[in-house]
Picture 1 (cartoon, rainbow, N blue to C red):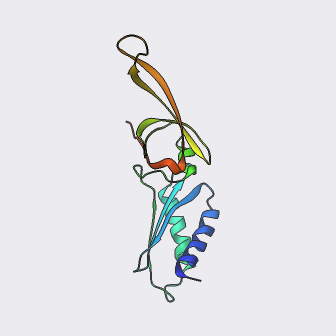
Picture 2: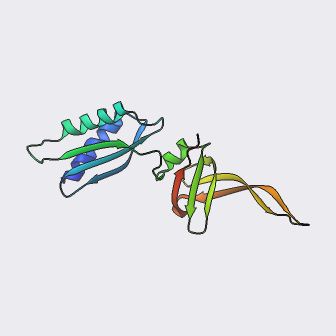
Length: 154
């Protein structure tokens, strides 16, 4: 079993103890620095990071392989990567970049295949001069999304 597989197994056990948390990224550098990025359905607390760190730390033997460990939450401005992240952000405003366009809109639904965005736009009237406000709606498949970031408003 490789070091990364061992870390991954231990991390899986740690996350089973906290079902509201999920793994965003696991990276291990050549110098054996373990970098774990987490997210949660209800956010990630400092205590969550400490608990996961302890489980990983206790599951590995420094005599066998010396390592450093960093457990952190996905930042507020980190791009969304997984369907579970999109689902937890329903009702919030996103900036979504696809190959064809950039959209700033509210996410109104998300499932395992696509997200639904809704927004208003000003477009030229079909008859006459001027512009009118129209409601727009788009279903975007996850594989079409290059980047999606939550827009934080105060």
